[in-house]
Amino acid sequence: MKVHAPETLEQACAVLAQHAGALVPMAGATDLLVHWPGKQRDHDRAYLDLSGVAELRPLAWTDDSLKLGALTTYWDVLRDPQTARQFPMLIEAARQVGAVQIQTRGTWAGNIANGSPAADGVPVLMALDASVTLASTTGTRTVALADYYTGYRASVRRPEELIVSIEIPKRAYDITAFYKVGPRRAQAITKVGVAIAHASHAGGGGWRIVANSVAPTVCRCRSVESLLDEVGGKPFTAPDGFLTALRADVAPIDDIRSTAEYRLTVLARLLYHGLKGRTPSVA
Amino acid sequence: MKQPSEGAKLTISLTVNGKPMELTVEPTERLLDTLRYRLGLPGAKEGCGEGECGACTVLLDGLPVNSCLVPTFQARGRHVESVESIAPGELAPMLRCGATQCGACTPGVVVTARWIQQHPELTVDRTPRELMAGNLCRCTGYDGIMDGLAEWMNAGADKGGAAS
Ligand SMILES: Cc1cc2nc3c(=O)[nH]c(=O)nc-3n(C[C@H](O)[C@H](O)[C@H](O)COP(=O)(O)OP(=O)(O)OC[C@H]3O[C@@H](n4cnc5c(N)ncnc54)[C@H](O)[C@@H]3O)c2cc1C
Ligand code: FES
Ligand code: FES
Image 1 (cartoon, rainbow over the protein chains, first blue to last red):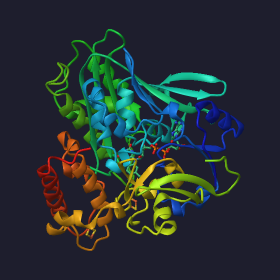
Image 2 (image 1 turned 45 degrees about the vertical axis):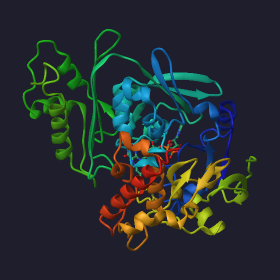
Image 3 (image 1 turned 180 degrees about the vertical axis):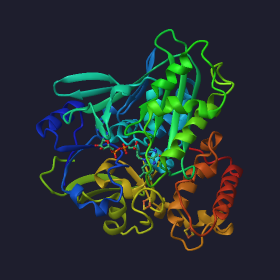
Image 4 (image 1 turned 90 degrees about the vertical axis):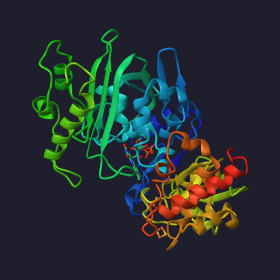
């Protein structure tokens, strides 16, 4: 095993470029080190340890956004009073990731980069219209998180790029909620989950419905969003009302954690009970 | 940390239980292994090796982490506190309340419990039970652990609070 431990972002990008694709970035290591002694093949790889790159650390507020450096952990967000006021949904999600020992090490960027369809940090970020900034020796670019994934554990990130930050625009939200369903409250991988946000339409708001564990990637449910957006449309009066639209948006499967039917049924109920009485389109 | 060559050992500085030290470690070494097999601090236990059980909990720069998921080289320049840093006398409330039976989970449990005890401000928005959810115990049914922690926190509060 070879470890590169750069101290600046510039060095980090340079080493990554030199080794074009052969280096594995490492942040909190809560995904990478699971069952480590048994992972001989992973021991033979080369790693880029990001933990010493101070530029990637801070959580910073600007006038119109919250910027999470790539090393920002769930715990950093949980201890930030302004996040609790501005984006309570980030707090809801952070406290449902693993348990404290995972929250203090796991990073939001690692959650995005790992690309699990069951990731709990990704739905809330996507529902808040977060964007991801990627950097390499040739420059930086910013992509909407909603456009980041291209398939199961596949993304637009090129091997020579690092996620350097995640930016969440401030908006006036009247509804935000995150629901996670797992076998128990802590240390559980999500069977089905959903993040819901509604902001005034001025400035690109509207509905955002983002589900996890029901498709190859965390995904926006655009059919449901547009039905909720329909002014004067027929209101949903039961969970099953969501099913047709959901079937167009998601493709749940049977696996060791749950069944497709359970996931779809529960997702519809989460939406219905989460929104009932809070908006004219769900009565 | 010097830039290593392939498979080479790494030399790092860190502080363990208040003692500054320089260590030469394998790049594949986990903090759990370094503590147990290099430093002779066998308190932290390997329960699951996948971050689920908390038996390997130590404090890294004052925050609880699973040492089975920390590559030792990431502890460079940082402060590690293992269960060995806790004076046995401090644990009286935990023992009195039946917080331990077989003991497999206990080193991790008391590291997390003492962290909560020393930071009562954490319980303003999260219950002690939620904060302890990463420490699994197959014996006690948790009530002894929660009672012991409550008593420990009260003892701290009587002394005018131990928050730091
Ligand atoms: C016991 C346990 C419970 C868990 N519970 C949950 C849970 O409830 N919900 C959940 O969503 N997840 C959970 N996880 C998974 C994990 O903790 C999260 O995905 C976490 O956010 C990963 O972040 P990290 O910094 O530890 O990533 P790492 O392990 O360091 O890296 C993860 C992946 O991302 C890549 N990467 C990291 N940073 C960057 C970067 N800046 N640029 C490019 N690539 C990068 C790495 O190469 C790797 O492929 C759990 C894990 C464990 C062990
Ligand atoms: S051994 Fe580390 S969490 Fe179980
Ligand atoms: S005392 Fe046996 S596992 Fe907790």
